[in-house]
Image: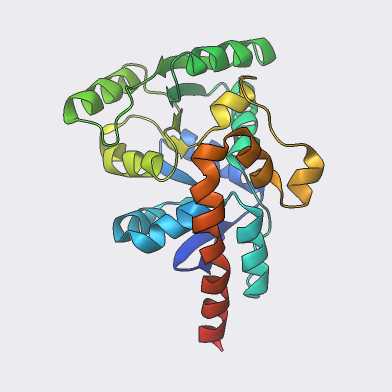
Length: 250
């Protein structure tokens, strides 16, 4: 068990990376299906707008703080989160865990070629790590049932211990929640864009930018057209909403 912090109605996990990985190990051994959501600010804002997304996050066992502003907000609300755990940090840690414990991995999503490149990278880092499948679905806003069946059949053919889904948030979280009962995988993680970074196809911000809470700006410089709305129109709404939440508590 671990504690959770209410940020604008989303119950965000307050957990250390070490505790999280230990929990994964136990859940895999018990064959216990577990959804893990990686939640930056835009995911929390999406949950405010869509009750279905909110219900998915609050029903998930782990909703990880993938954002310095979320961690700051938790402190501002006097309910601190013990550790920020990003998808970019979690992916290599999960791969290492699987290599050590002989757990199997399935890679679902990202752009064509990314999963295969990541599989090669994992094999070079951990030769004994078993990536038992890679599947890249076509780009669709919502997958057809026919495409869902193809994805599920590919996963269930190998029944991995860990399913890593890279479809962007909250789309990846919705897909996992709606199909978890049909998918034979214990730990199911919506990992976001971490595939590209670990595969060496995209660069991560320098460590000093992580500490300063500027990783978002580094990402914006790389993809200004795609991320302008997220960071300069949607994200500024977060601060007044957090202030309002604090005032309501008083």
